[in-house]
Image (cartoon, rainbow, N blue to C red):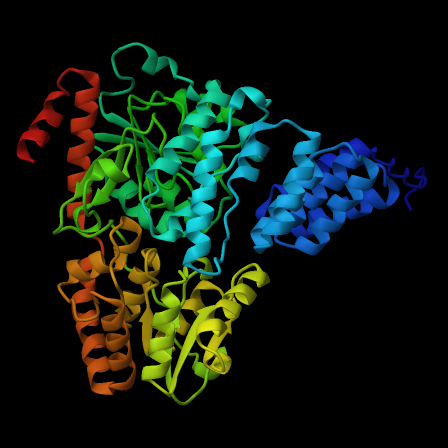
Length: 587
């Protein structure tokens, strides 16, 4: 100790409010959730009466799918504050996520006894089975929901905050039906209950000269501009839009990582946004965009409710979530000619624009493949026999797909079906139960491998003989990745966009041998690929030779540019500047 120095002063104890703020800050950071849980736990050990801290800890545990611990927190709050609705509501959401619909209904009812919140009423009225027991349950649930939506009167409920309790119909799209009337009715109810959702940006309220240097200002908006399917599907468009004609601003509403850095370098401007709806609307509107391009409306509440506002004269959505939004402020849905059948007016509330049938689905960068140094044993798969992998989220497995699984197992006695475990264990249990009713005594031939990182996922594809595309809602990004590996995918295109993406990739390649036109043919193609080594080698060779056609297609960029320029001109009611007119004439 140096002369004149004394003992260091003790660190003053921090008050509960500052410690709670620290826990909140940690919980908002993607890689600090464990630290946040520890921070909340330490605080509550000393201050067990902090209701808000118990609720926030429960919500964090719920978000990270530690459901049993989350339920304990919420039940503790019920004892502390019996009249509070939120813990009952959060328990209901957990039960719903787990597929425990009876428990969810009961908990929603208890929440509504304590609160007249409109968003909670919508949640209670629109319960869906994540893993349906069969087609009858799907049809009954859809009928109940439509009846309930028609019976809700927003005037009888308090508005609350739609972000806290609002429902988006994410799982509805997996049923294989036309969802327009559901989406349209839900959006209309939200506008009745929350009229402020239809906020109009100042630059849209009156016709005025466009801001900036005359280029079209386009804002890309998503929570998923990190290492996620949405980023992979849209990074090429963001990077390659002509900077002569477009100024590109990416508004990222989620966590940041290395993929976010790549996208930032691809854009003219990149803003990570946080805050409530009013803050986010103001942030985007302050740039005065001509176009707002939503990549995935319907996957989560934030961009869904943001899209009700008029933030640009022209607003569009695309197939990150491949179903109509039902939202009046979304002017256009961008799809692909090969993915649309029947009348667009029957399926979409938006105007439909389709990329041409000769184009790829998206400007998709060819994946950089890792070293494939793992074998089947590394995934605990049998060394002998044939592996038919369906490496998709298991909520995509429609009840009608069960018969296809049964047919493959019957047609190939040495075959094994491989799924990837879901993030919620109950989903695997429900799917196993359903499959066992149709395929008894075959449990050892249906394998669920643990969830894995991206490199292992691609390696799993590589050690599989055949990939199985789920019916009604198939692969998009995952199919492109599998084609990069060179593994054949059997697909049966459905009537709707979400079930036609793998088919469209194949059409772009010009190789249609693995596309079935019936469930019976699906089984036949799969079994032939699995059991006939020479035919499988032929299919792999064709995919390796023709697969490059689906990647990095500049035609996608040019067609999208031309369409967007036309829409901006149409909305402005006056011609675009000279160089853009030249571009439109050339197109």
